[in-house]
Length: 589
Image (cartoon, rainbow, N blue to C red; front, side, top):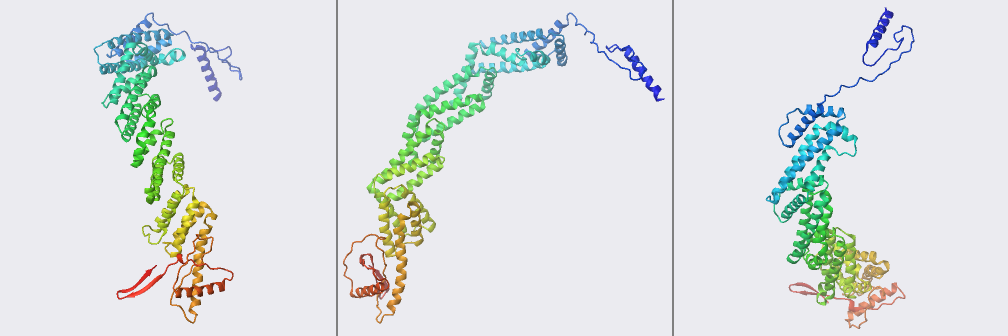
């Protein structure tokens, strides 16, 4: 049963091959029942396609031309778009593409050429002319897109295979450029009108930005933006802002002028976003910065920097730095004027003897102020911070020794007992600020001499406000100047601590005496070399005190043989206790 079926199938296949009219022909022995016989198929070409009717190409083109004309005249198309597309495909299939492409280009060119006449009217005002140009351009783009949709098969076959031929869309751009925009009079009126609208907007008037965006987009699409518009636009911008900069520098003060420049730059950047080509941004902003800032940098700084710094106008100072950072050479110029201002202002603080009383506080306030400007307005620029330090060092040392002396006295005032104006944290901050000013002075040995003298007085009279504050200041000086600078100062503190131990022992010693004195004697043992030099003075002391001195001398030398005591009564003080009816009183002399 299976074998019979197989034979029937073979017979049927043979019959098909014998009667097939599609070019498949049986070879002799193809239908043989002989097992393993070889088989071959021969493929022949299709028969020739049917020829087009003699008038098919011409009739089809007339149909297509009517459709193109309807699109160009904004009337209804008589034929179905699918039918038109198929007609184009048929013509392309029969190698009529070159002729069809030329015919289409010619029809489009004739139409575009006819549009130029509407722009010859002299009566049109500038804005009406621009609107008419924009309408013509928008219509042309819309028409080109519709025409391309009909001739899409032509665009994707014949045009694509010929690299020298522009696409239908590019052909539309080329025709509009050659016959409309490249016309000298039309181009001039178009660009003049656009520039006039931009000038109106710069003067504060409201203009149709969408119109400008469309027209400038047209120039960009037609690849004439740079030569036809941008060059003239930048020249006009240069001229406008050059005149504006000269005028406003005379009329306005510096803060107002800086805000005006910032506003102008913001407006021009907004124009780039709204309607100008992106490629215009860099040269446009560069022109504005050059004419409003670059040409007036020195004048701005000479006229207004001191006003801004004196008034602590941090907002305008930050704006000044921001604007000058955009201009070539702006920051170096600002840096030099900043340095000169600090030297001048600081030099007046230091160089005026009448202001010596407030010199150090004025210096601290001035340093704080300049630090805030450098940090908050000048973006913590390292160059500006270093220039400030150099300027401070220069003007402080213009008057040798006096600043060092006054800084030492200022520290003494802050560390002396009775100074209740600062907490421990505030005192620490004050000392840190003083150390900043201290770093600038060259005469640190002068500071040391005055500081040692004042420290001695505070320690010996017991007028130091805080031992912790004293030691903190000593630690800061040691860190800044090294151990050698503070070794004698540290020795003074050591002497005071040893003296306390000696007095405890002496008190016990006197209590064991047969006749204890009614006076309380406190002696500070000072190591020569650590303390300031004092001129010996002869002082006539009461007999009781002289006697007590001798007792202490015997006590001390008994413990430290070979040492010599030299009394300095001028560094001492006495407390006289009295009793009145109103109560007890103490008198310190």
